[in-house]
Length: 109
Image 1 (tube, rainbow, N blue to C red):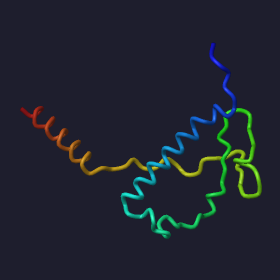
Image 2: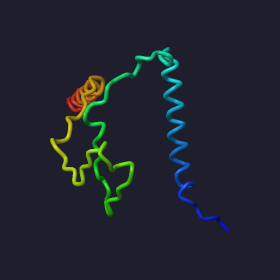
Image 3: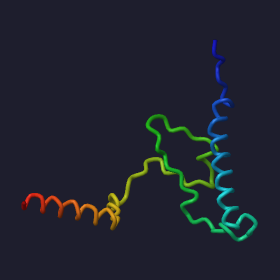
Image 4: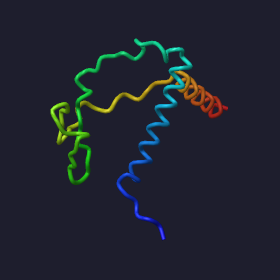
């Protein structure tokens, strides 16, 4: 019979995943020779660092992770702007042009 999971058990997986991601990042930074550089990554946060958006699809749950004077909570966020333009990859464009040209030659014969 499976044992019931506690709240701590449920938190173990995301915590371990985050630790693994951080270890991978540290390996990359070390490979760049920047692990001991005190100024590497020293970027002051801007005003967006305190924004918390309610993206819940049901009950709005508040807690220390999204409540308090250090957060600017947006209960009903509204999208602003439109969709970004599709990326243009010159290699893809040339490949598409080549296919069109090839079809045109086949149809001409």
